[in-house]
Length: 408
Image (cartoon, rainbow, N blue to C red):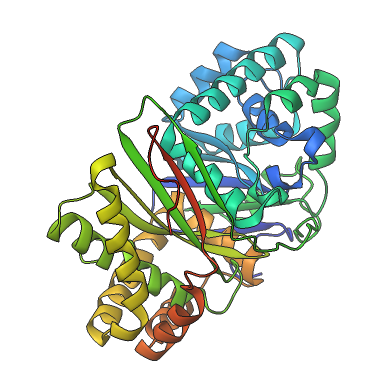
């Protein structure tokens, strides 16, 4: 069975002698699988998983989380949701019990649902009033329209109002199915023994994603005035390969060269040379059906026009002016980052899950490092020419009244 456990949906990476252990369950249903009428349901279920579960009341559950060291986290993404417990190996039984109770038996008491719905509405209001959060939402809508994978994870006020305890209970029951879960574990544990401990979870089938509609690039322009803000928050997006693409390594190198790290082009030009922006970056938004290369910056209203001009200059000249040293620095940065991540149990569980779900294979550090190190200057140039096309860019802007709406 190698690094796999005794069950098809259990993946164990041994760390002999390591006292830290991390357990993570990935439920292969995310916010993007919720229909429009159910928008926010998966996120609300995630909130309820750690409110009360099994026979544990709220305070008892909070005390257990603290005893484990506080490394307990639930999250919702566009394509999956999950729960991660990080603790020490001597607390493995308690960690497994918490994981199983939270996944299988969250409480949908009316008072809990009402409270978490209020929390979700507060999250929604915060995101709407925060220009950094809001511009990210606008960028995804400008890029992919109303595709489910571009919608806000929280849902909206109308859909949240429909999520009664009975609706959420049925939704949760549909999530917990054979083939819908993947458990990854990193630590000094025995795979066979762990499989027996996790016997309550439906792990008898290999994990498989739910189908979702193909993504179509819109390349629109959206803006929103936030009168109380002194800063302009701008985003550009370019269509990129999806999370399972064989071009991911080259895309990661391109992203680092463009706007990740102290030597990246955007940081050097806007922050170090001109002092126009404290926050300037590039990032990847990856979905299985497609991806997005994002460029973002924030600056004062008076500096926006000049900052925008410099960003456009860097994007337009990137593919023609790339040099081998930039590629080598990015490759070294990615390689060393991978080595450090692979040795950290809390990160390793995500690496294992992502590699299996996106690429259908076990995570092999040597193989992944070799893929990164094979990326050449020619690979990055070709990808940059294809991806960075200002004619199809999606753009989003949040800022004070009177700011020019055009980003690109």
